[in-house]
Image (cartoon, rainbow over all chains, first blue to last red; front, side, top):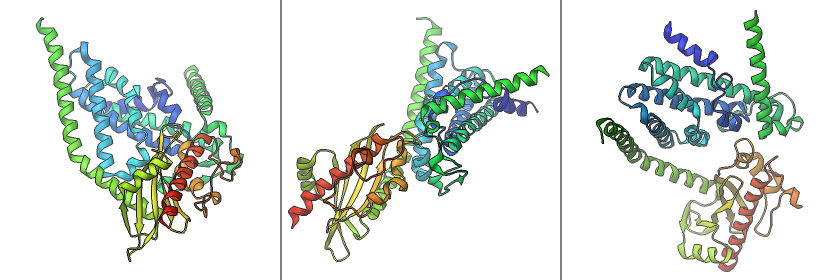
Length: 206
Length: 194
């Protein structure tokens, strides 16, 4: 029951995008389509679980004065290993997700969870936290991606690399290019953040 | 130096050494597989660029000459031969500067001057925008099929016929610049061969 609570906490109460407002750089950059958000989210989840596991394992060995460089080394090593292994054994998938992997190193969610959670909690709890936060991040990216993809291109779930041409909701020509470009990302994220704050305030007031 | 300071140095050094060792081990394990995968992929794209050929050979002296006349952007040159050993065309790889970094292109040209294939080998353009240059919607559009050696390509913004990727004119222009360069290089090779 305790583990489930940690997981749920990561998805909802401490959702990295909408609650902690962390990792804004990948959120704005890769959410032009749902599938891109899904790819980035899953890649970040794998790294998050791995780095949380190792940092929790080493939490009693790492002196607090040098913890940040230690975390960075662990995270960067993890990202590089995943990049190499994917390139070697799943080249197709690597080609699709390849651009997201180097971006994970600069994703501050990973470092934030290492610092705020994994360095203070048991290995099992840290893995659960990694899964919860990772899923919360993935869902948030997909939500932003869905809004931008629909308004920008008139389609949903386009995944050309997997041979899926998406669900067409209205003709492509009617799409607002603005939504696909960077300003569309800021506007979408701002409105979603505002909407979620409004909803949770209303819930609290009850 | 007291014991505490020594401990900081030792732990950080140990973690870095361990990370280095793990990375070296993973690299040794994956490097040959990655190289083999890349080679296979290259062969596939070569085949797609010039379907008539069954055998591809490099020619260092010719590449050198092409680079001198056309420019250093031409990074590779393959001569294609059919199963009887007769030359059927050439494939060139070109590097063109895009929006996010270099774009590597492969252009196949048949012996009679028809362009048989244009493909993007690698790029670092913006996801969802410039990255669409590698999709068929752009590369297989009408203005890019059935072109020959004598053509010079331009996007519609530059009074050409090619439809640029929406919101990614710089990336689209970069692709066309690369293709034009490949065509210029092919002209020197094929015309001098006759």
